[in-house]
Image 1 (tube, protein in one colour):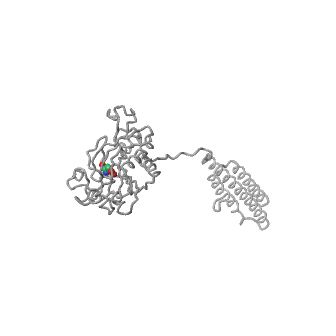
Image 2 (image 1 turned 90 degrees about the vertical axis):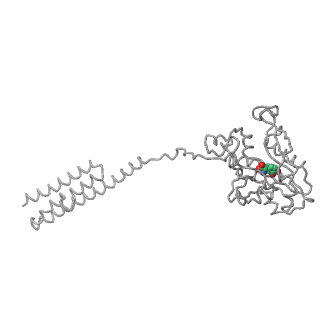
Image 3 (image 1 turned 30 degrees about the vertical axis):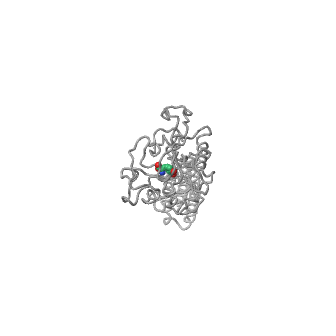
Length: 348
Ligand code: DAH
């Protein structure tokens, strides 16, 4: 049996050498798993096959072979463990390399929006009047006939009440405000003089839409009430506004006009910036551009809100924000403001 024993030991030694040699060329976990099954597999692994002869050996031979088998097995197991570790490291390095991110790259800038040109005009106008002590207030866009018309001394048969001009929610009662003037009434009913408010907001009119008319647009209303207020104060305040808004070289012109809630009333024109008042296409060769309506608050209106017209007087004015913005930025079509065309909006 001696020859057989040596043969067996040699086979075990060869198995060990072969396994270790093969291990060196393995590069993936899958290959390593195959190697594991092939040499160390519990069912049909090479080592297991060689152990199958054990029962046939003599009592003296068995421990010799057993020791050798254990030695080979433990060597292979150690090698396997080391190789696994090595592959794991290598695969991790590969992943790191593939998923590499350059943290020094500059970030992608998020596109930032900016204020709508009308909001900017409202802010510009508000800032000027705030410096003169006016408070900014806002009111409802859905109004009653009373605040929008009756209390403002708009007679029953006034054309502004026509179905053509007003969007009625319920005819004769509830409407979309056609002007910011109802806030004059709401303000005065809420507080006692002195009053100094500026009211920016949306207004609605059932208009045929064209380059200068929209069904929704913005107005800014102004109201000042005090004991010794005259038309000279109105002129002074509006002139100050025009100079700050459009430049100190601009001149104002007051033209007598009619509004139901002011007496006397005036429409205010500003000298054309394009031609400096000499006449051009922008001002239709008049030298002037209309910018707002104004006047001294009508005694009937003061009485309506419970103010004593013998003690208090005041002035009011109202301007169209789109119109001001069109002058400010040289825009020739009112529809551009609500058109949401980014090519237009990005210019501001
Ligand atoms: N509410 C008027 C309109 O929409 C504008 C206006 C004119 C307002 C004269 C006023 C004013 O406060 O005094 O046409």
